[in-house]
Image (cartoon, rainbow, N blue to C red; front, side, top):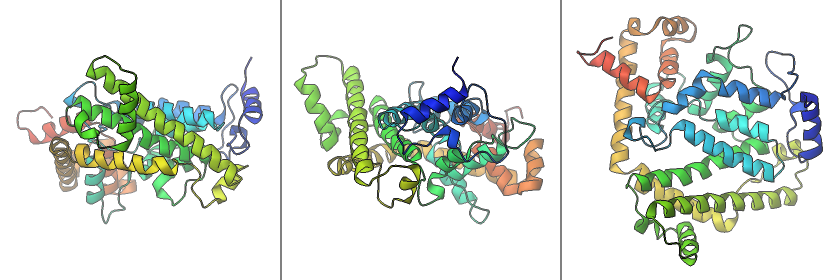
Length: 371
């Protein structure tokens, strides 16, 4: 029988000395008895997966608004893909996969509807009222807003998970596991945003030929003389692209761990040099790809139309609630007494899916919709 104690023993035997061990967690804000069969980080992962905020990711925008098509990535599919990339890297480096997985699965919980449009709109609306930033909102969700337990607010996650979720809320990430998640996030969206852009015909193969990283992939595919459809060629290319970035990151990071004598988690937290990262030769190519996506996909007029439309929905809903709070549901008005009207409205809108936000907009602004 495999118990938590045997799993913790396996971590001590198998994981690298610089990996964070679940048995050495700094604990939870509200002390709890340890589980018989799950480590502390496995328990945290399950709490995220069973949370309301996690389920909502299915109908939150990555780049394309949900109703634009069934095959584009959502926040949920991005999260799952990114989690797998992060676990692959973590396993290769003998880091704690369970810690990596829970931080990966939770990292986007704080995003509002309509992708980065939601972030931008709420940031603007909350100026002078405490601001809004999706990483801080993620912490707010897991520490306070999720309602699953009678003994404490939020999910009562371990210290290490909450530190991993702080990300931009502090200058430095404090564990190799959290740093791997951060890089895996960019690897995932560089790959699948490119895939979605090609699928939507907002990008084309010809324009990609000037991108060095794509040139490498294209030469490999041409060398194999693959006679197949363009759809399959794109899928092959995206797989190769992600594998190129993942493999480079693993090799470079392993070299840096040795170079900077990272032997304990504390060594990493004290190190002021980049440990997790791409090689010098690949870093510029990844940046070139990222800039290409910004100029040709994220700033494409159709994507801008989608995002600007989302901003308008959010701003109009927000102002309507501020002008007449009695239109808010009772549970939101109740929280406003504790957190203030602006913050409670911000929490409410940030928690909406694209679909719910659109329905709410129609309910409140369309004269023919039932309220």
